[in-house]
Length: 152
Image 1 (cartoon, rainbow, N blue to C red):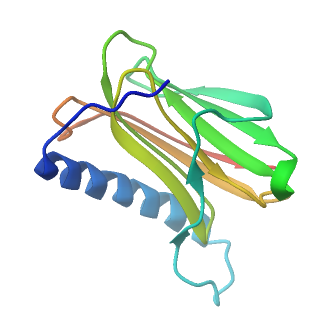
Image 2: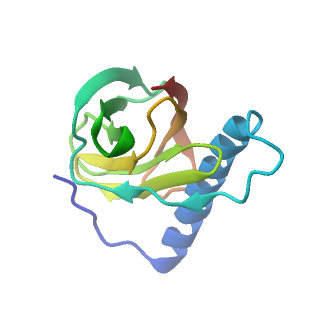
Image 3: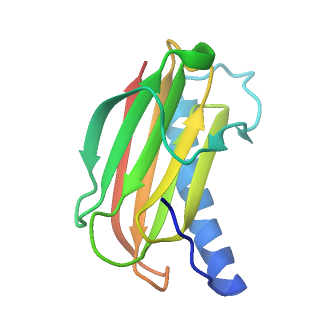
């Protein structure tokens, strides 16, 4: 279970900016295949306590002990979900994003066990980008980053 600890508003804004930048980078990577009429990126996903369905893959985050788990369920037109586990003792500063060219869901903060699950529905036959960041405790340095694209 995820336990978020308290942090100052300045830290929160800095971390939110970093995670938003990562989310927009993922959206930019995926947007290259979107039609010219595609609108702005909107947050339509949600954060859930646990991903449902079948765990499809696990990806290591280089330079860290963290791993991304990707889950898929046929419910709700196809549900894509990701979780970021740090796999070390103590709390960690984590950011996780799942996105297509038009929608995204993200979670960030200082967690005891994991960030996410971040989830998007109506993903049957679509590709999603997943970006994970592991930061130092202060949030001013990225210790590890991983981006993967998964097609359902």
